[in-house]
Amino acid sequence: MAREQAAALAGSGKLKELWQRIGFVLGAFIVYRIGTHIPVPGVDPIAIAALFEQTRGSILDVLNMFSGGALSRLSVMALGVMPYISASIIMQMLTAVEPRLKQIKAEGEAGRRKIQKWTRYATVVLATFQAFGIASAVQSQSVNGAPVTLITGVSFTITCVLALVAGTMFLVWLGEQITDRGIGNGMSLIIFAGIVAGLPAAIGGTFELARNGEFSPLFVFGLLAAAILVTAFVVFVERGQRRLTVNYARQQRGNKVMQAPSSYFPLKLNMAGVIPPIFASSIILFPASLVGFFGSDSATGVAGILRNISTLMQPGELVYTMLYVGMILFFAFFYTALVFDPKEIAENLKKQGAFVPGIRPGQQTARYIDGVVSKLTLVGAIYLAVVCLLPELLIVNYNVPFYFGGTSLLIIVVVIMDLMGQVQSHLMSQQYESLMKKTNLTGKSSGGRRRRR
Image (cartoon, rainbow, N blue to C red):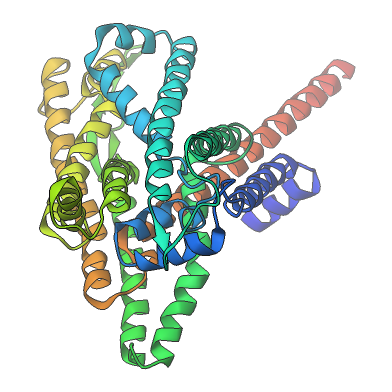
C-alpha cells in the first residue's frame, strides 16, 4: 500500500520538490568540497601538508576532521563553521540571561532575524581573531628549515585573515541556504559532509595498517563490530522516550457526561541531540589548536607554558577528558533548557483541560515535568559523554583514525536520522495534501450530481 502511494505521488509529480531539495543539498556539498581544496594565497601546500603530518595524533586531527580536511591544506575554509557555532553559543547564553535579548526573542520572526544578524557579526569577530592567530602561527613554522609561507609580514597576515573569514562566512551563508532550500539543518549537514568526506581515507588507512601488520585482522573486525554496536546504541537511545500519561477533563454532550480518552506526552531521552558534543568541541578545539600552533620545543618562558598547555589538552589526557565531559554535561542541560519550557507545557495542558494523573494543573505540573526532564537530561548527558569518550580511548591507545571516534559517529547517525525524519515528514505532507485535494474534488462532484438531481 505504501509503495503504491509513493508511486502515485511520483507519478503525479508530488516528489518533484523533494528531489529538488535533495539535489540542492548535494550541489551544496560539491561546492563545499571544492572550497576545501582551495589554499589560502601565499602558502606552500606541500609544506603545509608536511607540517600537519608532524602534528598527526594531536588535537589538530579532531579540528581537521570537523573542517573536512581543510585545515591540513590550510584552505580558505579551514575554520569551517566552528566560529559560527561559538557565536551561536554566546548569543544563546546572552539571550538566556539578558532581559532585553529575551524581549527581542519573544518578538517572533522579527526578533529571530535580529538575533541572527548579531550572531553573524559575532561570527566575523571570532573568525577574524582565529584567522589572525593562525596567520601569525603559520608564519613562524618551517619544514626542513624552509618556511611554509611564500610571503611573510603584514601582507600575508591581511591576505590570510581575509581569505579565512570570507571562507567561514561563505559556509555560514551556504548552511543557511541548505536550511531554507534543502532538507535538514544546514550547519549540521556541513559538519556531517566534512566528516563523511574523510571516512574513505580513514577506512583505507585502517586496512593499510592491517596489511602492514600494525593491526591484526581480528582487531579490524572488532573495530568494525564496535562501530556497528555504537551506531545501534545511538539509534536506540535517540529514539528512546518517556511517555507522561495525560488525562482530559470529562465532557458533557447533551445529558451524558463522557470521559475523554487518555493520551500521553512524549519526552525524548536526549532532547539536546548532537548539539552538546559539537558545542563542547568548538569551545575546546580552537584554544587548544592555537596553543599547538604557537607551542615550540622550548621548555622555558611563554613557549614552554604553551607547550605544557598543549600537552594537557591532547585527547586522552585527564585535563582534556574532564573539560570535555564537563562541557557536554553543561551544554546538555543548557540547550534542553533553551528548547523546552516546562511552564509553557503545563500552561498549554491546563488550557486544553488536560492534567497529569495525581498532579494538580499549573505550577505543580510544571515542577513535575521539570523534574522528569532533569532526570532524562542527566541520563542523556551521561550517554553522550560515554559515546564520545569510549571510542576516543580506543583511538588514543591503538592509534585508530579519529573518524571512528564517538563524536564523529554520533554526528553522522543523528544527522542521518534527522534527515530521514524530515524526508518522511515531507512525503507525508505531500500525501496528505493529495488526499485533501481528492476529497475536495469528490465533494464538488457529489454536490454537482445532487444539484442535477
